[in-house]
Length: 507
Image 1: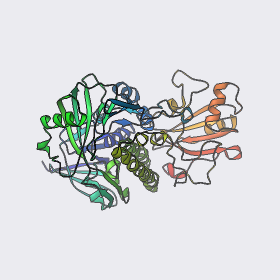
Image 2 (image 1 turned 120 degrees about the vertical axis):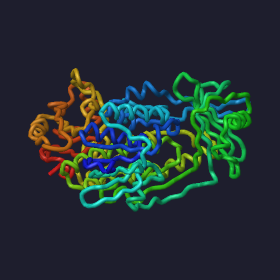
Image 3 (image 1 turned 90 degrees about the vertical axis):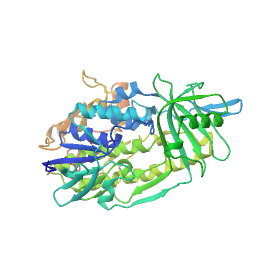
Image 4 (image 1 turned 45 degrees about the vertical axis):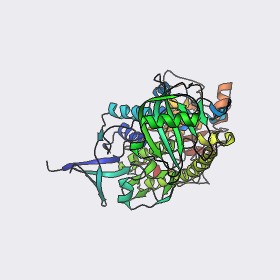
């Protein structure tokens, strides 16, 4: 073969973990031509990242996958700290308050292999495919396109390339972007997916040990009795692949737990080292970074996978708009909105990891700060601080969910209106309804859906009062909800006719 694919794709995604799959799914449902390449021979089979935060469940809802995720996952069990004959129990994850406006107030226990399978199957249903066993060896770009040379000799060309290929990824190196931070080689943890006989599934078990050699076992969803087992090591302990035998790991578990347990049927093992890094930039021309390629965290707080999937959710619609003719500065807003989030998450996960190291119950509790429902892009390039606001919401804030006062056969809640790859115009009041009707429909890029939620702004029922209160509506108001569920524009009073930020749309 000549090794050259003459078709110019819209996007090439490198890396088929949850982040690369989520981005590919979003791009494919927008009708873009996308190729996804993955260096591994098959999809990931380990439990590694197992906590799905409420905001990520909302993203999966938009993809039509929340129901399947809830069916495949389960509730987090209470923590059980074993201290001799006593067990101290507590709940690690708090429930989001009603004021958060979400249908998914609890963190979902869903192993990474299950999340990957859900997203992969959804990608396949849209006609896109993962090319497994293919490595991107060389990536170049010019003013118009990017070229990706694969290890099988083929050359692919696309308008943009996105690296979702992890901390040692090829795309970031090709883009010449620094990856600043540290890796602690002295602090290591063995992770094992296996069945354990003799261990109850009613707790996430923790056995603290002096010298930092504790062990923990979290029951995974399913009827096969599997646990994710975490075994802390000390400098000098052997952790090479050939030493991670079932016999040795079973012995470690029995000794550390101090009880007769039988570990069997290992399906995955890995060695974790704390790696805390943040990319200097998220974009160099037509090369962009997403997920672990842009930021790596400790596993504490279940933040890494969630932050990466939300990176993809922020980036997908912006790529569509730019490919349709919007100013390429819209892609700069991706970094400007998401990098501060990663920096904050990186600091918080490091703080939580210190609590894990010291096995302190007070530091093993997770609250609303980890739910990622309060992430806002207010003050960023698409949501200036002087933009209009309601009494409760600002431009850039996440648009909360709420029941519709007048449900229809297709929509009972606001999120039913937002679901899909489109912008949503919400009108409250007669003047806002007329303004929404006058909004031009985009000729290209993401479509615009318009809805008159209420023809008045004085509540007449408890349901109307709750909705108007949640959105802070006190007068005729028109809101533009971005495809990623954040508020792109607020117009009310005498300025209800003003449109959204011009950078959002193709010229």
